[in-house]
Length: 348
Image 1 (tube, rainbow, N blue to C red):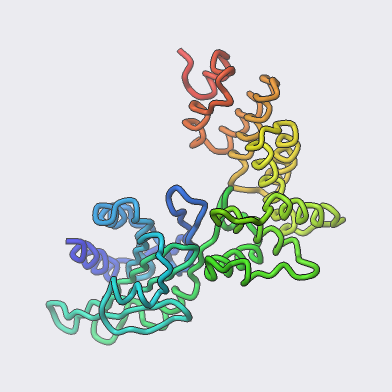
Image 2 (tube, rainbow, N blue to C red):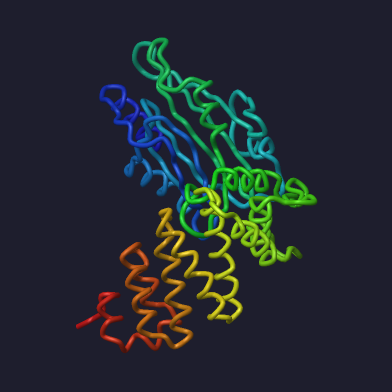
């Protein structure tokens, strides 16, 4: 059934133009800080195809859509047991094997009814950060014309990255930080050896090592110290670039989160306020959730009016935070406030 839906989608795209909407695809793995990203020409999300993918794979289905005249699906298979990409290929697929760097791939072909029509299916099995993914591209060949050739598929696979982003989206982080995060996740669990600190580590390296340290259960790395060292180095720059400000924001936010988790609301507030100011100027897609944490810190400090102001800014930036705000334990005292109830749409 799923193959039939893919074929129908491909036939449709061969007879109708596909608008070029965006070239970057970013999707978060549920209940993690991990984001998978791809670079695609003429990407168009296909909700119907994604629904079919979800029916087959449940929460593992990440995204589905079309690019040009081919379809693409991406799913999260599982947390790995230490096996490399090639071992997963042996278990999950069959066909003509090939590699794109360290990523094991497969190619299969199926003749279709009609003259000179062939379904070409490519599969890639990237492994990173202790997780394995399955990337499929289905291309219809009519005569000698491929809707996605093997070189085009290989370019897509080379663009695939996995990153850890706790606030906002991958594009909110500097490219250098994203690249180093991916290198560390590719080397998982030996990420620390792949990213040595060195004698004079850069702020990017300090930040990335701290970020990856948060993902490693039982890690001995003092992640908060890493963020603080990166923050101090960045704060000393007289005229920081946009990337340096984005990295400083991430450090302030991380330190604020650590302070709030440790019960130091005053220190958390100072970090979140600096992060919020940077997010407003950049701008940053996670600004609303930073403001929400500002509101949490203010509420813990008993500054209710200021907490409600911060909550209003949070919901104005990200309306999806409304349900989280309703259930936030730090706002328990605020729930008797008419303004709070109006903000979260609970007023009579």
